[in-house]
Image (cartoon, rainbow, N blue to C red; front, side, top):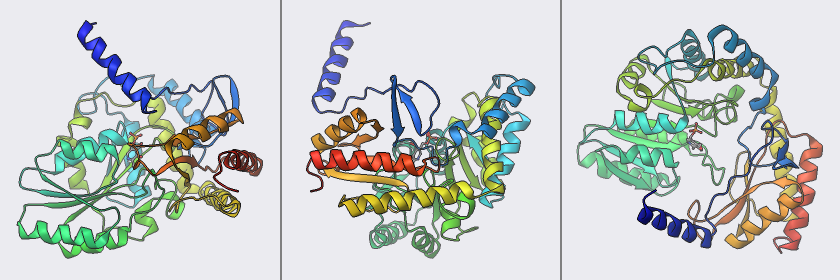
Length: 396
Ligand SMILES: Cc1ncc(COP(=O)(O)O)c(C=O)c1O
């Protein structure tokens, strides 16, 4: 390794460490599930996005094993050349059916869906208007476009309308509004009904990232568009299989024409090998399961309501969450780091969220509830959170 580079990298890493920003990912010694083993320690998982417990569900595991038998371990190619199997097309059909759209395109991840579709849709002379708290994959996608970028204050509809007025006055070729559906740091929901109304009023295009709404919001977990009953009025519904659906892959549910356009123009779709049979078949199994039965979605919300109610009654500040993403506000980043460490010692795994992921004075522990948590898991976690919360003076 080049000596000068090595020294520079070391010094940047030391700087991150001194700011408590250095990631040292912990290792799971087994499946992602509620009673997980992490680095040899048994813990109650409180920070996975496995909202419905599908990551280790027997139907998905069975589908994955059977697809390996019938289709092999890998796809062998990028999608446009020889990497489109019948399984990929079946999955796309099911996504469109689940989302009630004409068509859908499956990407390798939510990150590559955003970072590929947005630059494909936006050209020089267009204007994109983006919520200030949108996910990094949207921000990176927008950095790849030559379109003019405008940012509006988080969920502020009058700020959005001002940006729309200013954009319209410039007479651009396209105006596109992009927002997260559920915001991953706070667990609040975008007012998509109002966004769509404004979008229609100003002739804009609407693009929503439903990564944390898929499997969580709406009828059978169909997502934010179903939650607000906006079927047919949102141009692009982006989502992911890596959270509630338990597997891996990104999705864009849209019209047939837009699917064909994205398929031809998204470099993150065209230029990367496609997912292998196991992942695709397990993703199909996830959608088939949800289409048939919404009991896991119901259980997720029952657990979420119980957990939030208990923590609130103990006096914790849960910010503005409306979803299973439940921040426990510490405000102080050292306290958030300490809380996570103390919780881990007590057998509860939850991570601190500090600057730059959130503002400097908005540190928190982010906890995530799933359908797989049993009442005793939740009670165990609540008891430990209470104990640590008292030690740190978060509650009296
Ligand atoms: C809001 C949001 N969008 C997109 C992504 C990326 O999804 P994926 O994990 O499929 O790359 C995430 C995941 O972290 C997310 O939280």
